[in-house]
Image (cartoon, rainbow, N blue to C red; front, side):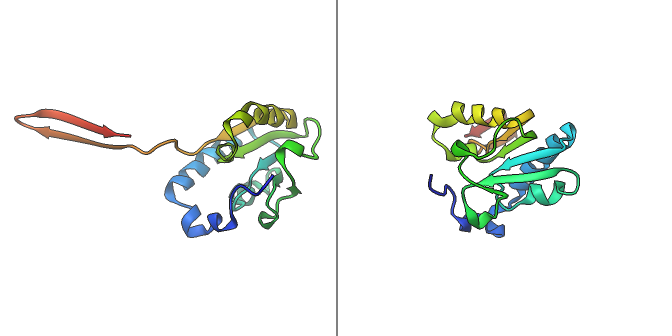
Length: 146
């Protein structure tokens, strides 16, 4: 399987935006709520999750890109990991890089790697622009563009 995302994608100025930090907040909040003792992160990106939770949780990562320095270098479809090895599997902003037809197979593989939880996150599907105008003659008008 070829590398899905080129390393330039992870350039800090381009990759770590305010909306992405919002996403990290919710990811970390979910992890904190379940308090796993061990996690496997699929597609670690810039290792932000790792750097925040590494002192509290046994952390492992899996990726096909050696430049990301994952703990386990490999393809999720041919992972060397066997059995329910982790309390949680983290798969944030990864599934959108696979063909839709692979989705149910990926979910099955992820569920086979965990004892308890699979935490998933997908990027926003669209952007929205909305405006509300209130004028004496027109009343209140709303415009939403997706």
